Image (tube, rainbow, N blue to C red):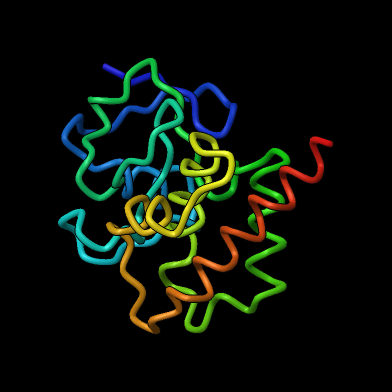
Length: 156
């Protein structure tokens, strides 16, 4: 029986094993390659996507849990705050190897949706589940602050 959900604003009907992790449905079935495999046990955050606006680890989320839900991947991340994040990431040269960055951006986008002007503590708490092998944490924090400030400025 197909599982129906919305991915990046498009209704999908997927005939896959219900226990298949969302990560592999995104990558193998839908060819959305921005969501990365990192650890496979929800510890690194590279596979972070949004499900109904919440940050979720796609590597451990079975597709059966997503029937009728809305999934957003890095390819579908949009809006003023998301664009501010992407600009800040580029302006501050946040990525080095880049492997973790889609998960970092997805977690940061949820934070900015919930907290207009996050403190360092807010950022550290929201981003704690995202590992960066290149240790760009200082630039990540600075980019989130810059994106928050840009978003606030745009609202004026």
